Length: 322
Image (cartoon, rainbow, N blue to C red):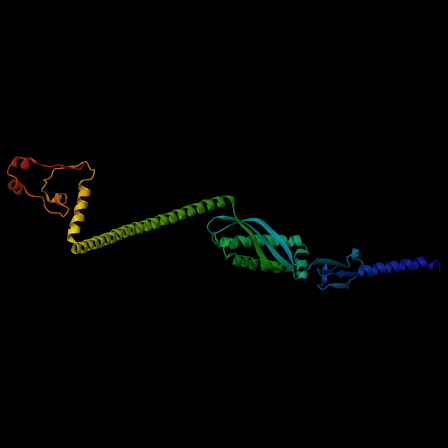
């Protein structure tokens, strides 16, 4: 019995090794390709525990795992030319998934690097084709979405031949090259300067128009004010004359006296003017009599006093403003 224990242990170990070599596990992120003597026997796409022929070292059944997740690869700094002759630098990426593991194994031996290399070449060509059919502003406008769809559609036939499915193509960056950027900057600068000059000219035109309107309104307002002032002045003069007329009609003697006093005040003010008047002048009527009686004439004085004709004729009083 003791001699059988080592043999039993060896047999158990061999059985365990055979069982271990016959089992493989597929998780939810993988697909498994079972290959026997270089030929694909089966493809496992569902997660679980599976069996195969043991002894992979004699090339009986081998298992190759491939991704069952969405994958991505990037394409950077692609120089593309648009229809106008200018150049862009474009960055893009592709989202794809292995949907036909058998074809993927048959075409690129299940090598992701080889598959992405072929997709990269096709993507480069598709980007150049799509950009080359459009103008300079298309990639920076709403047309960019349709451009990405076109690139995706051009890439799908190549991907299907590899057992892949293209889910999406996105353009991450579209930048002008350095020389085109400088040209674009100068063009935009010239456009902005021209627009500024146009706005400035329109502003000056509007300012002149407003200034002309304001000047016309000033003239109209001043004219209306002068007209109103003349009207009011005329009305005031009329009202003054009316009041004077009423006052004269009520007491004509006082009115004449009042007017004479104003005349004396104006004429005899300290103005430096000398006036030579006759004492019998109407101007001095209230100097001779408070009642305003006229001074006696020279003839009546001579008749009343014949002895002094020479004195009466040589008497010329001087009224001075001093």
